[in-house]
Length: 175
Image (cartoon, rainbow, N blue to C red; front, side, top):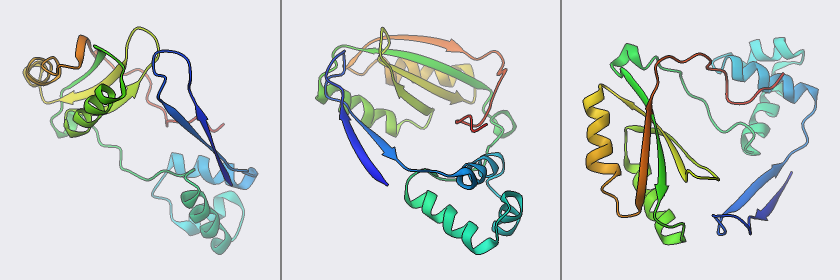
């Protein structure tokens, strides 16, 4: 496995570095990834049976995939509404500038906000897309007014409430 570093030198975010993992995966590795993405709680023995290898090499492969950064982690999928979070919304944020200090300040603050569950830096007219969950509209509105728009680095904010989620697939299509 090798790690190749690529610098983005054009566009709005000229100081960004992208890291690409270069790992060679065989058909068994891909099968392991599909099975784990479908059921992260599967036992090693059951996983080994499903992919057609014995348990010890299966465990070695899973650990190697974890160490290589291919498997980034495991987590339970929680039903947000069942635990009292009735509002899912997106905030599209434009910054006043894209200098490194402003980016770092904004990214640090985003990491502190519990309401923000995902944050993606984008190219184009929007600098950041924030996925937020809140107990109610008032909580989301308070976050937008009292926290997000008060940051001096924030130039514009557009929000959209999720009416209904139509598709929620695992993050990577491993067909």
